[in-house]
Length: 85
Image 1: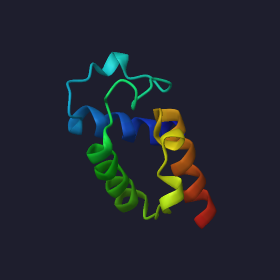
Image 2: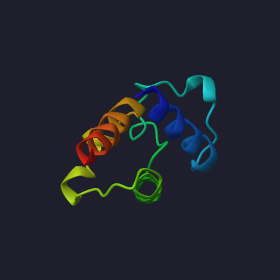
Image 3: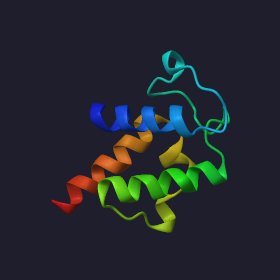
Image 4: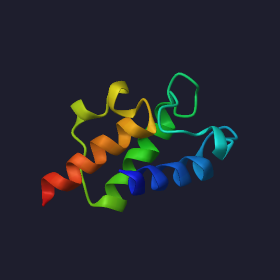
């Protein structure tokens, strides 16, 4: 999970619609409530993750609960990667 969180942090720092202090981007920060992710940036992130990890997201997986924090996203991604195995 730590590797996935590191990839997510790097992506968000470099592609966010607002400046992000890397020191404040911990695993539990609410990315949606704080505006780090909005609907457009969420779709860009989903596309990035799909390509990076060779996974596909079902429409019912792209919900706020799964993209609320780095930890939530990493759990979803790691679960999908492991499920491919």
